[in-house]
Amino acid sequence: MGNPRAFLTIHRQEAGYRPVEDRIDDFSEVEQTLNSSDRRRQASRCMDCGVPFCHWACPLGNKQPEWQDFLYKGQWREAYHVLEQTCDFPEFTGRICPALCEKSCVLKLSCDEPVTIRENEVAIIEAAFREGFVQPVTPVRNGKRVAVIGSGPAGLTVANQLNRKGYEITVFEKDELPGGLLRFGIPNFKLSKNIIDRRIRLMEKEGIRFRVNTMVGKEILAKDIVKEYDAVCVAIGAETPRDLPIDGRNLKGVHFALELLGQQNRLLESIVIPPKSIINCKGKKVLVIGGGDTGSDCVGTANRHGAASVTQIEIMPQPPIGHNPETPWPMYPQVLKTSSSHEEGCLRRWNLASRRFIGDKNTLKGVEVEEVEWHSSANGGRPEMKLTGKKEIIEADLVFLAMGFVHPEQEGLVKELSLAVDTRKNIVVDHKHQIADSKLFACGDAVSGASLVVRAMASGRETAKAIDNYLTK
Image (cartoon, rainbow, N blue to C red; front, side, top):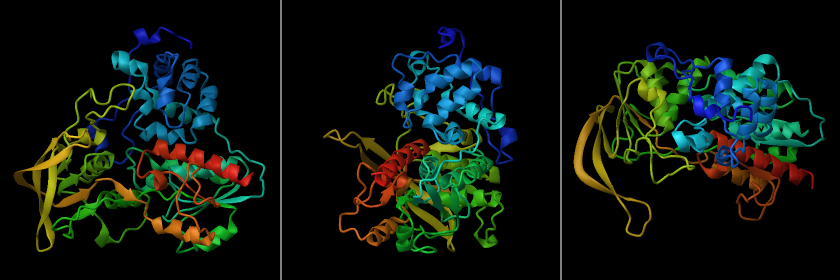
């Protein structure tokens, strides 16, 4: 710890966002960066606590105090080497992680100015790429082959970890390009896709093969993949969106959030979309149903299209502002979050349940909503929702459903693979991420349900260890 008193004199300084009037016309990343001198000053604020709650809160177990100290001292190479020990892709987490570590920082508790851990992390990895610290690793091959189905953060982590151990890795991806939801779910203004491309090129140089446009069970049979590889890892995510089966659901203008987000990212990749299928919010009244990050991404995308208005509604109550006694430090605080997309223009409302979609000649015109109230459960369980009877109609030309995800899109794939290994046991994933004590493994959202990128990566690392243990028994 180089400067034990820096936190007393140096305040938290965030890089902030590009001005709204500048960023609203493009899909470039909205977040700015600090210069190297300011970044080192921010790293000096880390107190190297006796109990590092930042380390405790991070699903990956990142050693934040260690690399903060190296960064403060200007030892960027050393900071990178400590960071890469626990995090395979800091360029992803440093941009899109909600920074569980910062919410548990002792400076969050004492003065509400936690260390800028996430920004420092991405600064380290970008310096590492820029200065040439990141170089391809050529492992000694052990003669065993592993197939990874899915190239999202969990799949990429499994592939990266096992490749470094000498396994020959092939990653199968059903979409046009690798990356999973990093590629076709998260908008470019949060994660530029050249960042993904840079990492994929590095992984290819290290020997990992990517087979895109390949649906396992369709373009390649499950039985063939089981026969050809010594182990198979299912990392297909949980992309099936939660639907809203109310009257008018089939009206033209009602879409799932990923229809908009995935299509927009494909257009930016110059992937051809049939003209009649293109969703354009320009001049439209847009309603986003769902108050989470996916809904926020729809807000930002609609604003960049030039929507006439954007409204986001949520069935739950508005979270507290600033502090929530129900989620005290060092827990992640459930408080009102205002994203860069919200700052660009959005009316936000809470306690509204959608009752029916209203249309004219099969075209959406509005949504009838009803105000709800939430009451504590008598037995201390989940709060109970009650309709109030107060209804209104929100005019809308386009609606995007952003209410989360329910289960893996290819849940039948696991059954196909299990039959291919001739298992007679229950098809369950155990604590080792292994399916039915076979050569099949699973990780990420396919196991846990929709969660954070950082948790998917942590699951990928654990699964890679389990596969390695299985193949070296």
